[in-house]
Image (cartoon, rainbow, N blue to C red; front, side, top):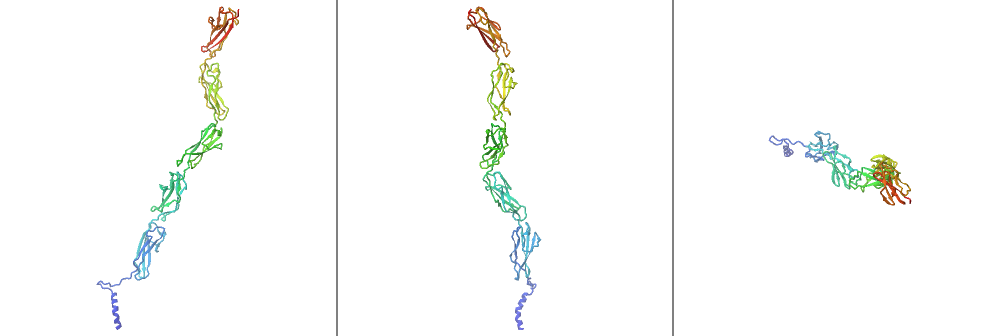
Amino acid sequence: MPRILVLLPLVLPFLAACAPKSDSGADSNPPEPQGPTGLVVALSPAVPTVGAPLDCIVTTEAVSSDGSAVTYTYAWTQNGTASTVTDPEIPAANLVHGDVWDVTVTPTDDLGAGDVATAEATVADTAPVLDAISITPTSGYATTTFSAILGSSFDADGDAISFAYNWSADGIVIGTNPDLTGGFTRDQVIALAVVPNDGSLNGAIVDSQNTVTVTDSPPTITGVTVSPDPLYTDSVATCVPEGWTDADDDPEGYRYAWTVNGDDAGTDATLDGSLFARGDDVGCTATPFDGEQVGLPITATEVTVANSAPVLSGATLTIATPTRADSEGITLSAATDADGDYILYNYEWYVNDVDEGRSSTLSSSKFVRGDVIYADVTPWDGRDYGDPVRTDSATVANSPPSAPGISITPASPAPGDILVCSVETPSTDLDGDAITYTFGWTVNGEAYSRAKARDTDSTVSSADVGPLQVWVCSCTADDGTDSVSVSESVTVSGG
């Protein structure tokens, strides 16, 4: 009994503390056991992207009230739908751009489940990646079209990728298309930067692996001809390029190469006719050259050397004032043939502009007094006719009458004889003009005027005829335009 009395003071207070509280407001039941508390979790990365896992990280551990070990269970939802994943990590393969992931973590110890912790993250867009770019061609001119060559590109979200192009010349942006065409100047440095884009995000800027320095542009031409065409042996052939273009505006220049029948013949812009002959094929090639660059050569169509027609320098009528007594001819000036051919001539005579013959002379039967005569002479080398040459013109003049035949009778007169001067052979006139005769006498050199004249004779009285006189009779035939005179003489005997 004494032992029991000793213990009561100690037990009674404990029993009183554990007894249920009365309705007066004091706790009548002890608290229920509680699981872990204070758990805080977060998702890492906070902004997840496709291609990397999503982890649930315990940032503040749950605390067990009884000191027992704490474990965690994970419940994930994807866009509000429960996921089968129960690990603290969502594999990268499960992440899709735009999905919303929620995680609920429950801590548990020996006392049971504690307060849950939650976290949420939305899968963000992943920027596209372009691994490399380059410029082609790797050299170029003022008119070259450069193109971008893209390497591999990738977008983890599977988004379609577009590209922004920034072409620059000496650091200044000059184009934004995949290709860059012309308009450059020599020595400019062409560079390219490309930015990939998936519709939402730009990827990293990628600079081209190479730059291109614009070099001197070779000049161009559109054609070449040989001039003149036709070409003759007395010509100087000229190689004529056409359509010069130089993107750098360099001065025009050429290199030439001539051929004759396929053989090299010269390198000048011209080729002298002494270097080719009739029938040869003459060609030339012109290569544009701007002082630095040569362009593409162009060869002209060959020209076959044609026959050179002969050339007559002049022609004149042989008789400047022809009459019916003449056959008109032609005096030719010098004639040449560049091919050395023998030259013949064609004649065309014209009388009063009417064609009257083809011979080298014109018969007097073809014209009359007052007609106008001229001729055309055309040289011919057996192949081609040269240009005709016209002579001067001539007007047919009057034809004078022919000289009459006269005689004095008696031929040996004595003093006191009658002297008669007679027309024995009448004059003729090619123009058909009527002829009249006039007579005149002298005696011993002195004019005698007492003769009796008729149409065709003249008489000296016997009374005037003395010894040793010298009598001269002159007779003039006249056609009205021109005249001709003849004379005869006799000497009177001494008696």
